[in-house]
Amino acid sequence: MNLLLIGVLLAFIAIGYQLGLKKSRNIAGQGNNSAVLHSRPGYYGSLVALWCGIPSCLIFILWSLFEPMMLSHMVFSQVPADVLSHLDPAGKSVLLDRVKAIASGFGVTDQAQPYELAIAKQYAEALSIGNYAQFVVVISIALAGLVFANRKINKSFRARNYVERMISISLALCSGVAILTTIGIVMSMLSEALRFFHFVEPSAFFFGREWNPGFSTTGNAEGSYGLLPLLWGTILVSIIALLVAIPIGLFIAIYLAEYASPRLRAWAKPTIEILAGIPTIVYGVFALMVVGPFFKMLGDSVGLHINATSALTAGFVMGVMIIPFVSSLSDDIITQVPRTLRDGSLGLGATKSETIRQVVLPAALPGIIGAFLLAASRAIGETMIVVLAAGNSPLLQINPLEAVSTVTVTIVNQLTGDTDFASPQALVAFALGLTLFVITLGLNIVALYIVRKYREQYE
View 1 (cartoon, rainbow, N blue to C red):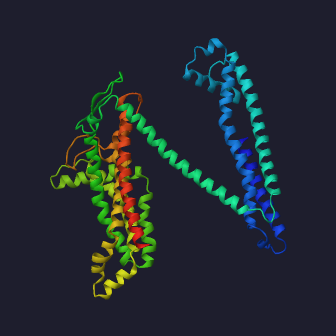
View 2: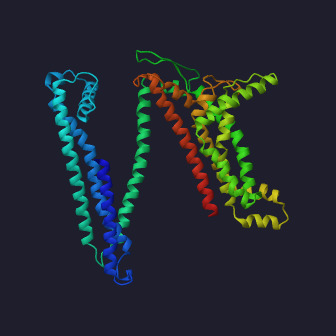
View 3: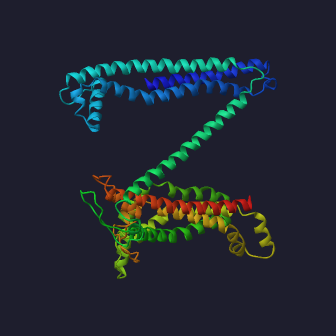
C-alpha cells in the first residue's frame, strides 16, 4: 500500500507541475512571453508541485511514525491483565511480533493462544483501515495543495521568491540533519565513554602503558586499560603508510602536473584513483595472503625475522591504498600554482626541474602539507587492513617487523561476540573511538585550514 501511495503521490506532483506550467504559459500569452509574468513559467510549475508534495509528504511521514505506536498501544490494551503483568519489555516485544505474524497470515511456530488470535484479528482490521485512511488523507491533502497553488497563479504572483525560499529552507534542513547526526554520534560516544571512566581512571587509561583487559561477569574493570600501546601501534603503522604513500604520491603528482602529456594525464590519473575505490577488505586479504608471506620470505632469505602479520605489512599495504589521496590532492594543488610563476622562473634561465624544485613546490607547499595531513587521518582511521595484517600484540615496541595492535583493531576485538554493553570491557571501545575521533578531527581541521589558506592566496 505504501508503494502504491508513493507512486500516486509522485504522479500528482508531476501533474501539478504540468498544470502550473501550462497555466502560467497561458497567462503569458502567445509565444510564451514571460515578460508579463513576475517569474518564469517553470517557477509556477515548481510552486504547484511543492504545494502538492510537501504537505502530503509530511503527513505521510508523521502517519508512518505514529501509526505503529498507536497499533502497539491497541495490542497491549487488549492483552489480559494477568498475562500483561508477567511480561517484561523483551516479552512485550515478542508478543507484539507474534501478533503481527498471526495478523499477516504467516502464523507462528507453536500454538497461538485464543487472546492472541483475537488481538491479531483486531490488529489486521485496524491496520487495513489505517492504510486506506492514510491513502485517502494523503491524496486529499495533495489534491488540495494542487488546487490551492494553481488558483494563486497570476501575473503578479511572486512564484520565484516562494520557490527559492522553500529551496533554501530545504537545504538548511538537510544541513541540519548532517550536523545533528554528527552531534548525535559524538554525544553517544561521549556518554558511553563517561560511563567507562566510572570504572577506570582517565589517567590510567590515557597514560597507561599496559593493555590487558580482563573479561568478567561481575561488571568490574579487571585488568589493565592503558591506551599508549594501542596509540603507538596506530602511529607506527600510519608512519610506515605515509613513508610509502607520500614520496610515491608526490612524485606521481609532479609527473602528471608538469611532465605528462594531456593524453597520458587523461587516463593515468583516473587509473591511479581506482586504488581509492577498492574495498579495504580486499587490501586486507591481499596483505594477509600475499604481502605478509612475501615479506617473511624476503626476511628469511637475508637472515632477518619478519612476521607475516606486522606493522610493516599493514603499513605498506595501507600506504599503497592512500597513494591516490596524496597524488590526486597534490596534483590539484600543483596545477593551481599560477603559470606566471613558472614563466618567470623559466624566463630567468632556470631549467624545468629547477623551476619545480625552487618555485612550484614551495608555492604549493601549504596545500601539499594539507594533503599529507588528510592522508594521515585516513591512515589513522583505517580498520580492515590492520585487523587482518597488523596482528594483535598490544605492546610498546619500536620494531616494525613484529605484530602490533592499533586502536581500530582493539575496538573490533572488544565489540566482537556476546558482549555486555554495560561492562567496562565493552565500554572501553567507545572511549577508544572517541579518542580516535578527536585525533582525526584535529588532523582534518588543520589540513582544511592549511588548504583554505592556500586557496585564498592563489584564487
